[in-house]
Length: 365
Ligand SMILES: *Cc1c(COP(=O)(O)O)cnc(C)c1O
Image (cartoon, rainbow, N blue to C red; front, side, top):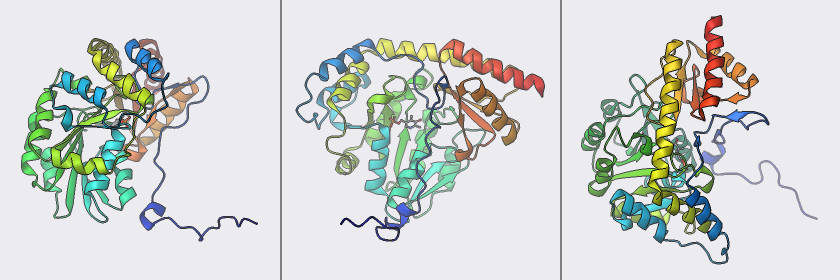
């Protein structure tokens, strides 16, 4: 006879037991379009699909643990040393690996008020404290972050461009932040949307920060490269940090199929740039329409837009009406922004539908 597991028999470690499960977007019902996860509006490069198909014909061996081809292509495109790059099963894995390596129980990881909430989960997993500094006008504020540093701070985490705000701070601000931090504080710059901002800001300068200081810069194939399902992210690491972070990664973390798809996608810069340009054009048109309705939409440098309503009830009502019309946006209560909805940019006709529903609402009020 096998005895069933009982409550109180098997017990998680304290800080895991105290954690809430990570809040992903609501499941998408049939007939509903999801604008809730910042997935790409457009398909990935056909070369990536072709490379994945080809890789799928030989899955007998374990994948390349050093991501050799993928790292070489990334390094070539971004003018970096391939040995300074780590690849993860999504940039989420890289972020979590850094927290495992550098933040212990009761130590502090400092983020920005509306920073990406996954960091809060990564901290909870190891019993570290996630604390935040205020933003000004939905923008990261280097001064506020520096003011919030304590003797327990081990890591500072900034998304630039931000999620869910979409806003961008200048690289010079980031350098000011780095220069104001102690050398024993690791700065993580999450550039999941970096490709959408590369025109506006010089991404290379931030990568240089990762060459010369205790700074890691992460990017992903999930957004501009339209490969969220492949789970591939990468980052530029200073050598000593790379060695530690690597110990806390799954040693065979990215499937051969995904490595091949990502390498081919990175090789097709023209396709990625076209996705970014087409997305930005739809985004700017949609933002303009929202502003005409009176919504104070912050300037987005990403593939989504944050829509602030007058109050939480108005946002909840809009969310209901959008769902009734087969459109699922992302509620922002978890970020302390219950009065906001976040809309991932989809093809133009879908965004026209979203705008029409919002117009009907604003006409009624
Ligand atoms: C989407 C996103 C990521 C990417 O996560 P992956 O694990 O690479 O898919 C990371 N950070 C932010 C802020 C994001 O919005």
